[in-house]
Every structure is written in C-alpha cells, then in structure tokens.
Length: 143
View 1 (cartoon, one colour):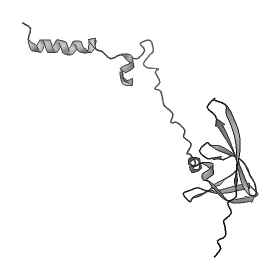
View 2 (view 1 turned 180 degrees about the vertical axis):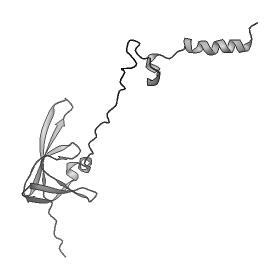
View 3 (view 1 turned 45 degrees about the vertical axis):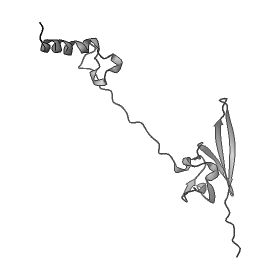
View 4 (view 1 turned 90 degrees about the vertical axis):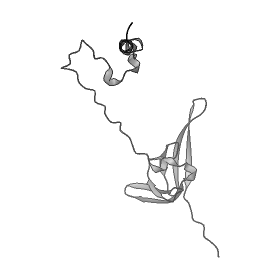
C-alpha cells in the first residue's frame, strides 16, 4: 500500500501540471522571456505618465447656468467675467472652453458672449450651434 504522504506529494506536484495557468492568466512577472533575445540587450519598458490637462471648473456647468456679469477690454482684447451658480467668478477669453458640452468661445462683444457648441445627434451627425449669453443687468429694487 502506498502511504498517504506519497499520494499527497504526487497530487501536490501533479495538480499544477494538470490545472496549470494559461498564458493569459499569468502575471507580468511570470511571463516567459524570449529565448532568442539576449538578456544583456533587453531594455525595460518605461511607461510614460499620461499627461492630464486640469479641467476648468466652467466645464462642470451648463451654459444656461452661467451668468455674464462683466466684460473688461484693453490692449490684450476683451475678457468676459462669468459667475457660476456657486457664486464664484471666472474670466474667459476668445478660444476658451465653456459648458458641459465643451463649447468654444467664438467672440466677446460689448454686451454679450458667443459660444459655439458641437452636438452629435442620435444618427451620428454633428451639428454646430451658437449660443449668445447676454450681459446680466442687476434689477433695481423699488422701495
């Protein structure tokens, strides 16, 4: 009779052979190197960090939620001052991205701001629309 310890030993060594891991299940550190490549000339693959552009807080809000509160102009051109629903103000100029659909500011006029949105409909067609945000004028309270 074969002892239990020998059976366990045989089972312990044969299980990985029978139920071995496929190459897709192997970890990166367990992968077999190419036998035809010299180990002296193998260069490690260096992963470059992905460049992330910090998103503007203005991209979190819809254009209808933004309030144009002022326009400043000078030698550098016109700059619009926009207020968000949380009460913070931001300055934007021609070419900046604004709104949830990442609309591009086309022009800043004396009393309004023109933003161009590109929309893709359900059929896959892209449409361009221009939205004008007028200068917010504070209403005078009558006593």
